[in-house]
Image (tube, helix red, strand yellow):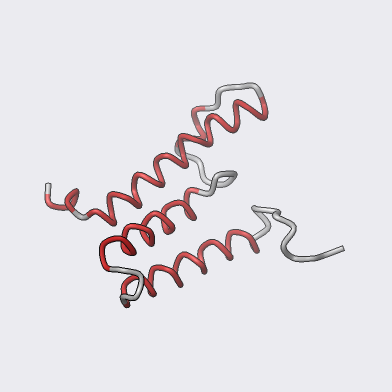
Length: 99
């Protein structure tokens, strides 16, 4: 299939898949129970949304170079996705400096 020859797309999809699989193991580690619904659920760590855009950005950087317009667009896109996940309250990394 021609769609699977697009390396940035494959890298993004693999990153998403590995993040989803990692959620099963982190749930087991924290709660000592196997929860396979984490394979399809959203939320929690690691963030599959962030993994998806960072995988895309990294692959575009390797394919087009880090001085390309494509990489710049992917970088800004991944920064927006990652920061919105942090600010949404789902990820509490202590970056806000609140009381």
